[in-house]
Length: 312
Length: 97
View 1 (cartoon, rainbow over the protein chains, first blue to last red):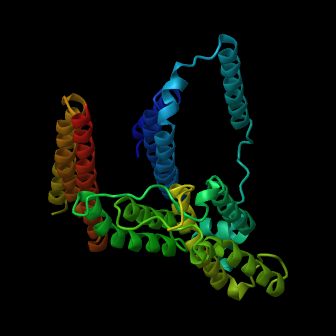
View 2 (spheres, rainbow over the protein chains, first blue to last red):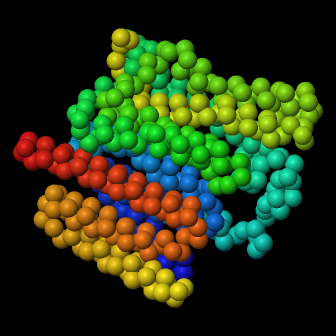
């Protein structure tokens, strides 16, 4: 991209950010936010952060957008009341000053960074060979900072438990959301039959390619979860009962495999999540494979929401 | 030969850009949801087809070229399906009013 294109993208990005904050209609704000996420992934491509770009497009633009659209649909009943409220002058002044203050602190922090920004990238590249993976991002996520990734996986499972806990007692263990009924000969059902085979191949490819190229389990899992949700929305399959044992086993598989591999490292390499050199690649692959069901299930089930129908 | 291929790329991509422009103008100017969708899907599909066609000689390999064609087919599929869904929900909304 030439500087002119970069400048146009940056201006569009700022305009979209302001638009999604300022616009009063929640649906329009979400539409702006999704477009913002897609443009932001272009910026990451420009900065050579292909892994981040893929994640931003899949999760920032796609999955979060879908979650927010669901929230908009739920809030529609109360939106008119929220519009008619107008906060007092004092409150608005304080809010403006606080927002400006946070912005000023952020600007100062960015300006105060030392001139050569401190980086661990050379160490990562120098030691990447020991892990057996070719993509430095994957190396950082699963070898050098594996503990962070483990905690992220646990956070995802806890978030899902939090969503499930919002269900009323009577429908605990049931199916989330409404049963979708689409025209079985309609275009949505057609798409839901045609797209998943392609999407599943692309998702697994992204997951597998993540070892040596941009991609990885998060981006692949988002695509797989999207395919499952598409099939549900077209009415071809129902959302799963959340008391299904296999489902729950899949949800916790990732953290359990991760912790097991970590303990194995304690025994074989002398540190939790340490990998003995000749076994680094197989152990990383084991963690990745174990994380896949957790990510696909948690991402799809977060979008499904809390159980709303009793066990049938 | 190379310059001939370059000329082909330039002409095809420029023609694609014209279709994108026409589709955008239609999206902004047409009076209702159906005509706007018409402008968007017809022009964008053809516009993207021409851009992909222009990029094929620059792809640097049969596999990369096939990937470009696959991307075009997937975009066509999703934009055709989504425009049908939008049109259907617009019709339902018009019938309700």
